[in-house]
Length: 625
Image (cartoon, rainbow, N blue to C red; front, side):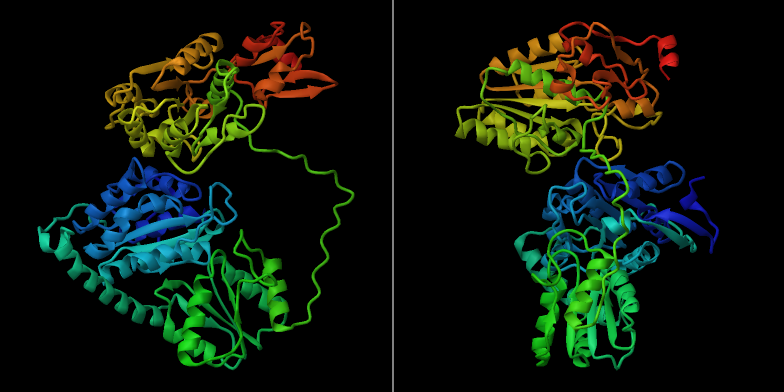
């Protein structure tokens, strides 16, 4: 049985933040969940997927976030508790239905989890999705710790049903990927089936209906504001008589709490933690500020709270200093850390403070740099190499997309010139091909193609653009942890009840006249096929098919056959300089292959000018070790 399905109440578990949220959702009676995977939310989806295999919870990996939200919205309006999961940029994709779903509302608890990514550990931007709550007029809840996240998501479902509105549950990477102890609570009975009651005047958002629904939404937000002022998730820590105030949210609360203790200012500084951040608790904030001489706002990301607090203070006639973002205070960039928070609290309030001396590491060797790289045996590396060889005499623009293959922009592959968002490689290729006489070759992964690349390709065919699209089909959604997509053969994972969508048939059905399938580990044949595609006038599509090496290993279809560099090597180093596989290393001035990481794709052997790279025999492998 999955550990998060345990019926024991009061059991202690050490879990990842995403696991804690999953357990909280299960305790809340979650019956329906949908997602498009995206770090830092991916483990939450994985756990719910695993739970769905052992229970009556319905879970699906949807084609994209817009679809996931629309699927969940329908379930919630049948009276079934739903959770829709995505990373922060995924909410951009789902923004269209989000805005109107706020008008329609829901008939059962619905939580939209958005996992924000300060510092962009695995993202193309670090947008602050609290503004989506404000834009859509939806409540936003934000936990400060792993154990609170587990309990708060239960309250999010209850709040959703109180207001008959979706609730945005905003986490950050530091919550999703921290590990802590939680205490299990009782699991509420899941209602897995409901009934949709037809009421077009409440659900069909033509203008006449939407005008009425907008009034209802604003009334709901008025109710939400009253709830926010009384919410247990907005609370004050410290002496009421303290004249120095801090207002904070999320992980910043824990940093601030510890900093006040470290500075010995428990009696002089009080802290207002905001966990219910939209609508902001105006009356609570006014009461807090009323007794302060100075207030510091600590929040990662944008000055969302700072702007609101200043507005409430002005409304109440307070003229005290209220600051947060600034050159000498907190940045709008990246994550915060305890030392930064401690330093800025001391500086703002004029507290004497001596920073702790850093640990002396001068005697330690420098940590080797490990830049991000495609894995050993990654078929993307072979495809990039082959495309460059086929286009070596051309002036080429390479629009790329969001996935492992984005790393193709790094040398020596250098096949990524423009990356915008999911699916944009296809659409931007349309623009490049019309605005420039350069050859355009764009790259997109299989999952990303299904997510949002199809419409760009339809546009390209209709408008008769001239470029080559390379669809990198590695049989999984690799970057976020090997989740399925519509092109995956689910039988390989012993999963039944799914169908597989053929990328080739789909592309041909869209009207693409030149479609080529290559096996990128066959280098010469692939280069020849790519050359033909590049010469075609119009839209040509190359489908590069080879399983992700890590995924293939996990489902036991990969049979590694390591290679070695023999004495025939003349040290040209084409293998390193042209494909840079991480299994290569230099030892005693000679090129070597690490037999423990080489999977035997044989791409390097095919490009070696001396044929010096050969399979390593089993006996040789044992002796080498």
